[in-house]
Amino acid sequence: MDRTVASGAADGGSTPLRNVEVYMFKLIDGNSISNDILEELKNKASILNVTGKNRVLVDIFVGDDEASKVYIENKKKKFNFVGLKFNQVNLPSNTTEEELIKTIEKYNNDIDTNAIFVELPLPKHINEKNIIDRIDPCKDVDGFGIKCLGSLIQGASSFFPCTAEGIIELLKRSKIEISGKHCVVIGRSNIVGKPVAILMLNENSTVTICHSKTKDLKSICKSADILIVAIGKPKLIDDSYIKEGAIVIDAGIHRSIVDGKKVICGDVDFDKVAPHTSYITPVPGGVGPMTVTMLIKHCIDTVNYE
Ligand code: GUN
Image 1 (cartoon, helix red, strand yellow):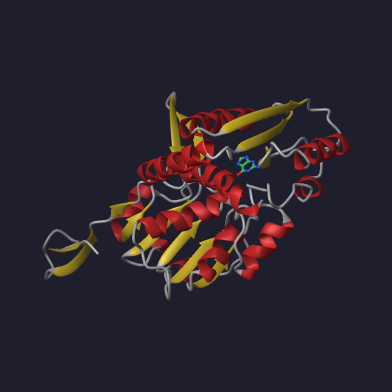
Image 2: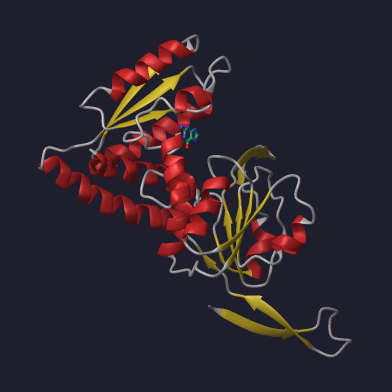
C-alpha cells in the first residue's frame, strides 16, 4: 500500500508535533479497466463471428423514459465497438403486461436471439417482477431473474447483476485482496446492494449489509476494510465514516446543475474521503462504465449456456 506518514501539528505548532497519517490513495480507474475488458471481449467476439456463433442482444424498451434512452445509446456504442449485434425493440408506453410477456416469449423461442434485456423502469401499469422472470435464464444477461439470483446464492455459475459483478471485477483487476476482509455494503437493492454483498461473501469476505434503518451506521462503516456504497444519497458518506486506509467503492451517481454547470457526484464525498483511503473509485469514471461492460461479457458468455 502506498502511504506517506506526514508529521504535523493540527494547531499550527503551539503543541508538540503529532504524527498525521496521510494516505496516497490509488484511484480505481473504471474507464481504463472497462476499456481493457472491452478489448478482450472484442477478441472473443471476433472468434465467435469466425465460428458462426455471433451473439445477438434484443433490448426491449417500453415507453419513453429519458434516462433509458441515454443508457441505450451508451450500450449501442459499446456493442458496436466489440462487434456484437444490438437489436432494439421499441414498444409504446400503453403496451400491456400480456403483450410484453408475449414479446419476451417470442425472443425466448427465437434461436437467433442469444440475450434479452428489458429496459427498467417499466411504465407504472406493468409489474416488473412478473416480467423479469419471464426471460429465459439462459438469455437473462441482466441476471435479475429468480434462476440467476438462486445461482448467485448457491455460488453456481450464471449471469449476476452487472453493476455488482463489475464491482468485484474492479477490485480483482486492482489486485485488491478480498478474502478475510470486513466488507460493509450500504444499500440493499436487488440490483446492487444485495447481489454485491453475496458476491463478496462468495469471495470469502466477512460481510455486513447496512440500510436506511441501520443503527449507528457510522461506527459500522468505520470498521470496514472495504466499504461499498449504493444508497442513492448524494455525498452522504464523508471522512467521519472511514477507517484510515480503507478501500471505498462508490456505486452512486447523481446529476445536478450548479451555477449553470452540469455536476455529477456519487454517494461518497470524494474530496473529504479520498485522502483517508488506500483505494477509491471516482464518480464519474469508477463503477459506472463497468455495468455495460459486464453486460457485454454476459452476452458473449451466453455461448456457454446453449
Ligand atoms: N436501467 C438502468 N440500469 C439498468 C440495468 O442495469 N438493467 C435494466 N434492465 N435496466 C436498467
